[in-house]
Image (cartoon, rainbow, N blue to C red; front, side, top):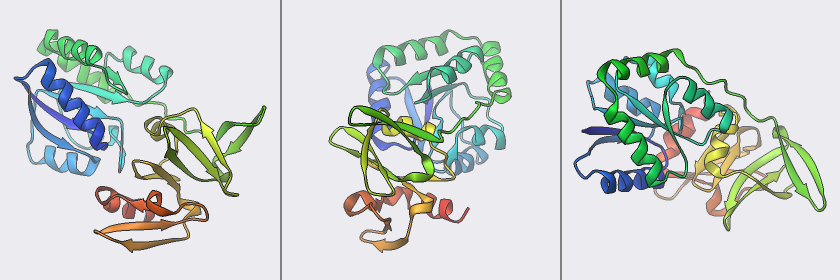
Length: 249
């Protein structure tokens, strides 16, 4: 069985590959892509496989753009940080999913489900996929704890998000730091991609807060905002191209 992985997080992709190898050593990883653009080009050039693992939110857009722009009749297992309401939508449409962080039992169940399905059922799954579009609802505010109180911060008051010491922090335009109850992967599903970009594993930046973008060592870029600095402000090399495209939208 040949598998293609579409996942923009290096660690998540490596974790998935290790689990697949543990479950069934005969499964071949045919290719791995981290953007919609790369995936589109590969499928247009005839790349094929038996099964796809697809992250929904990629560095350059939503994975559903891929299925809207090229004919692919390969069964899909999504990897997602969507909330339970969105997951119920996937279940209703008979599309399998793995909620991050992926566990070996869940992955084994998904692969076994795929193996049990007939060709006719595979075709039905894919038709459901073509007809399905998630109802995207981006967050417009975050509720954060301030002492003994809970306060509301609108997204237009955010400078950036950053991961630090095992927690995710919201930094507002005044430089105040608030912990939020979301992982970085979950934020990818919640933030408006027109406004926020994940420049590296540890930081999301808001386009309206960017003051300057400069060249940095090893073909990378460095972003300047009022409150983002140091290594957190460096755009990782694999994201530079998509970051430039995002700035020019």
